[in-house]
Length: 114
Length: 112
Image 1 (tube, rainbow over the protein chains, first blue to last red):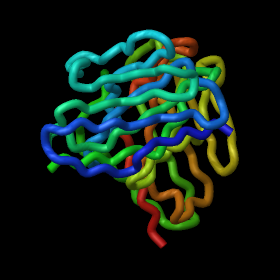
Image 2 (image 1 turned 180 degrees about the horizontal axis):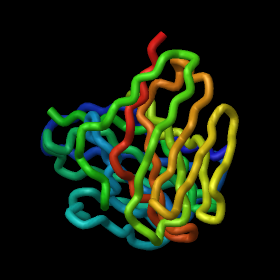
Image 3 (image 1 turned 90 degrees about the horizontal axis):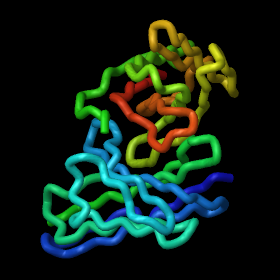
């Protein structure tokens, strides 16, 4: 149980375009999901907390207008990177919170902006 | 967040030996900790968790020890295997809080 999926696993896009990443909890409902980004050989950096039916809470320094988060259902949260630039290239990982505050992570999405 | 952009420390062990990965935390309010394993190109995988009312918890081939006095926890892996090679993280947070704080992880390399 407690499986989280992400789609797509890899995406390459041109600078200036927008990219949407989906995060789904497959066998449980998640009122709270989290979005992280990770640069090579570094730790996970929390970007925002996504709450079903309400606005996301962004961490300091994360632009909410650039990283749009929508949590429209108990099993789906989406992250849209708007007007992507090469510096947005990173590994984006989502997680869904379980009943004991543990987090179950998705497999990640590798974004490359050319 | 409190995640840091540092190069990760590395622990090299021989296959079959036991591994001990250490983790320090600074927030006294943290009372719930999880060990995650992250293989290259993948998301973190849950290994084991521990709450602050416990000093020790055992799983399959793994043991987590928590020392609240010095704000330190460790993950012991018995009979380390090549498949254990990964980066290990020990985020913590309030038991009923909303966020886990990830610090720098530790790279475990298993030599055959």
